[in-house]
Image 1: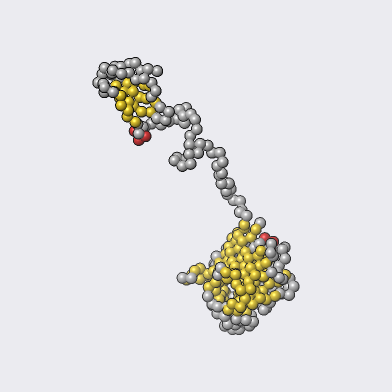
Image 2: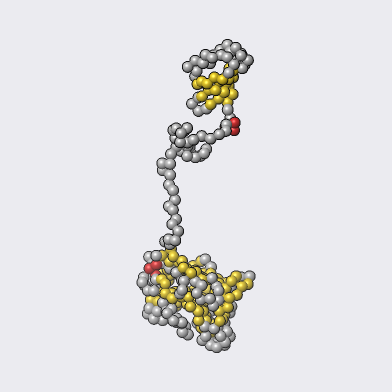
Length: 310
């Protein structure tokens, strides 16, 4: 259209419209619209000049329901996408439902034998002489203390909760306080319905995989493993010590095997493939020490953590 008013005032037009020439008044303004913008032109009696409106000068609100047509960009200065087509949203996490892996934990609180959680909840039993909750700069732990008589067993056992087919993982942090006149066993054992008895072969006729030390047998760490017949012993060739260690025993059903790691690395001879629990043998846990003289040996158990499928 042609804007033919030429008195002092305000014109509204499109940028393609013909604005009047020969304005009679000192100033005239025209609000123009274009494809992507709105701007103001003014005439001072001689010629038209354009003033662009900056976004910061615009105020008010726009109704996306009644005042906007077309497709809005999804991202502000981002991908310039015009729709949500192809957008992948993460699956919602429903509260209270278990993940693919199940876990259990025990956190080193002495004779509080009901404090395990997860798959270990309600399965913890203590036995032997003394279980003292201790806190020092190394952490919170249960100090497991044998009595001053030979063949006293002191520690913990967890009732059966897993089998090799569930790919169970056992992990704990421990420290022996001496290497003389003592035995120590940590790991999987099917013989958990009652307290263990004094023996240098705790897996005889049972199933399991235990990380062990026996001062009467060797100065090294070794591994007991069995499938319910006569158990076998593997010498790791790694000398036992009184340092603090993290032990991990992982069952791999597909191999099948049990893999024993100390402080993050598979220990020498630590991959066990023969004479191991079968896929369905139920197992629990043992963590205990046995005195072999009257020296009252002790060990620290800081925590126990387990994981399994199913």
